[in-house]
Image (cartoon, rainbow, N blue to C red; front, side):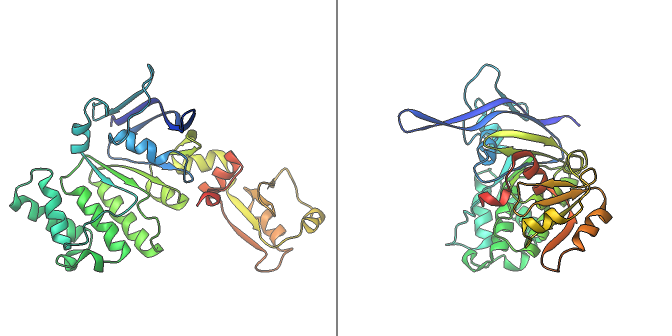
Length: 314
């Protein structure tokens, strides 16, 4: 397919006071295929948003000989407008104009791209229908729910039919039903050939949407690849979460350490295994509410690689 984005050895530092510097992105490299969804998964402060902003020319990377960002064949530091004109951006915070209605928000935005009124109105109607907002065409923005505002921001980002859609924490704070609605819209867009770049700290979101992800922590890439392949190659299939268990009770159990791996990063520990029945036998020693037996996920992988939970940072 060819790469839409190529990033090589990128760093970003910020000055803190007169003497200290903070390294937000540390020697990051990756490629993004056309018509794919590429995600940055990690806790708040991992460097996800900083990396995204360097891609669409909101921030400049540190100038170093080996450093390079290529988007559509352009360098964000040399051709920022060419990249911005071909990209749609959904920021973390909804920045809609609440003094005007839904249609007016989109119409005013279309003028930034030089769209003729007739073309703009046709495109707006298409997007409102796609985002299930047609009935809210004349509604005041302040009367919309959080999920509707999020879909409106996405519609605005798609007005000029960009080649790249950039989403920064697209579903943070939304209820599960709205999140799944947005996921469906993003899958539909990818099937139509749009390339999607997103940041998230929701492991299920990354797993559901992304063809490839980078798991980041403290500005560094911890691991990269397909979510399904990363789990298959680096994690057992099942985990037993022990919730209300005294350590002394756990010591009395006969656990086969060749089959079950004990993860002491948690308190009480989590037990991992490819043998579901082995974990089921351990679980039978505890009452309901004291354990939770499930499939492993990207949260478990992050814990294994870093020794801490994504949820510690929220």
